[in-house]
Image 1: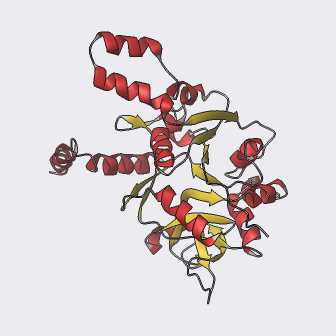
Image 2: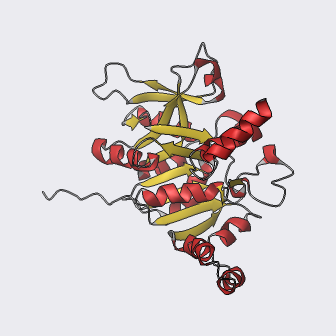
Image 3: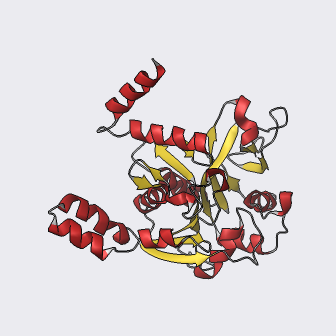
Length: 299
């Protein structure tokens, strides 16, 4: 029998349908994903990471009022004309390149779907073939890789090598803060050390199975979407991806590898500030000045 060739992973679904209530009033009229990390919005970094990992098609799951995201990844001819006339060709190139990063598709997460981090996948399911796997990204999570390969590419490589139903990225965090994250429980005596039995959401330190915190990067087979369609809402009446992966882990392989890099979330103002500073320190044109400013404030 001829061996079936697996399709390469070329699609990413990015969840950007939240209300960003922790950032009100800044998010009253704009999506949280459009808040800047220095000079690019949060969502830009996610798309960059996906594209650098081999993704061609970006499916952005948004909600009513989030047209700013669609506008951002489109051309703005008046601005381009002004930059060209002013001779600011370097900035013109930056602006013109944004719509060319990938093929963008926009899907609204409509109100008939339950709230929860699994719902964006249901909103996008008709754009995904049953024989393909996808990258799934939470719209407020950023990463910094410690290798030449982006974190998303690291996950894709593991998925293609190990052939699980799902890969979810994790990062070790101090035990004192594990209660603020989802944590994973690894299988005992497994041939592969990153096979898991379940994910648990925000468990107290004495009940958390590990201090490996789940971050917002996944590679998922279509089995995950099929399982989502028959999964009931769970805690707080939300549709949790963790519940789906836990169901699948009973019969299939779900893998949670430790990323070779850093995971940074922008979920609340303090974490957003921390992430901005961390990304600023990665910039050669900003690093020294940022350090001096921080010393000035502390002095």
